[in-house]
Structures are given as C-alpha cells and as structure tokens.
Image 1 (cartoon, rainbow, N blue to C red):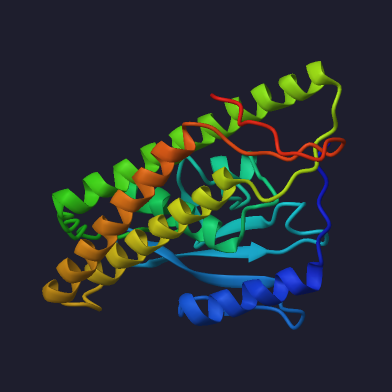
Image 2: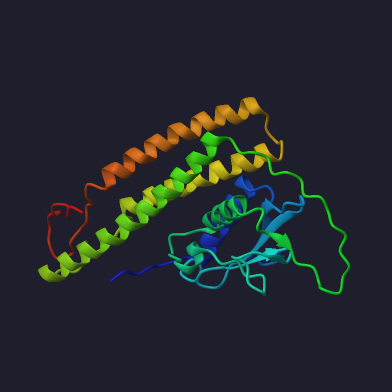
Length: 255
C-alpha cells in the first residue's frame, strides 16, 4: 500500500548540506560523499567517541551502516564496532543522518561510564585516573527524558492510528493514496528538538558556550518543548486522510 519514490542523489546532496551547516565535527570521508565521520560523545578518559555513517545505495529506503571509533566495550557496540540502535533496527525511510547522530549522542551521554576503550590483552596498561563526570543541569536532563517519552508516545500513536486506518479502509473496500502525514511531521520536530538539546549539552560540557548563553538557549528550547507537546495533544485527537476512489474528504478516524 505504501510506496516511496526516492531521488538518491538529491537526498544525498541534502544530507551533505545539512552536515556542513549544522554538524561542524562531521566530515566527508570518501571521494563519493557517501561516508561521514564525526563526534557524538566522549569516553570517561576524555577521548572523543566518533561514528562512521556509510550511506548505501537506495538510501533512505535502505538503512546506513554505522560503526563506532575507537574500538570499545559497550552494550550497544558489537565485536565488529557496529552500533546497535533501536532507530536502526526499526528503520523507516523518513529517518535521516541527523536522527542517527542525535540517537547516538543520547546513547553515549546516558551511558558514558559504561563505554571504555578496548585494549589488546597483551598490551600492558597503566591505570589512569578517571575524571569526574560533570553534573548535568537537572532541568535539562528532565527535559531530555521528556523528549524521549514524547517520541515513544508518538511512535505508539502513529502505529496504532495506521493500523486502525488500514483496517477501516479494508472494511470499506477502498484504496488509500498516502501523503506526508502529520505524525511524521511532528516526529521530525521532536527529533530536531532532541538534536538541539544534545548539541547544547555537548557544547556546554566542552565549555564552548558560557553559562549565560546556556540558560538563554535552554529557555528557548523549553518554549519549543511546550509547542511540541501541544501539537502532540492535537495529533492524538485524530488524523486526516484522502480516499482515492471518492471525491470528497472523509471524516477523521478517532484514535
């Protein structure tokens, strides 16, 4: 029922443009512009955690391959350095590179002390003191958790609504012509907000912005959070759709 027509070169060009404008730590690592490497966190020792995103043919229908550097011991990193994310396991063509970066940053911020560099057994190691992790601002951490909760709620609403809508159409014997749904647009807004929060957190932790700018931006993102929650509340009330064999627009199906 659902089909996607994707201009691979156009999507890839948009990804390069986004990274150049919004992700200064990411760079193109191959001549074809299909491999990108950049920072997503730090080990407790202070060493940068980087990811390598390899864009496959037929992206974004086919998900990218994501590996982590340096080699490390972490529950979400396998022996080959592949990164295990729920977003990758449940990949959808609406996702983009920025969503992978945001998910990876959330993962390594919340599990920083779990990640440690893998060292060959035969290499002698000198114990190194671990620098204490900076205490995150409580309100910012609560906001990050709230965004994660909203994303879970949105995914559930989207799935349940799609199932109800498809069941209703099947009973009526009609075929659906799908357009960009409000739930996908809202998901993009939530993911963008998550990106901003993670970037703010990293810049503050790395002392790239001072406390005054931090709280000014935090206030701005909090306002965005309230707007996003209002949109989610409106979205929970129902969705519009278009039926291909009828001239008029049907009433929304209530979730």
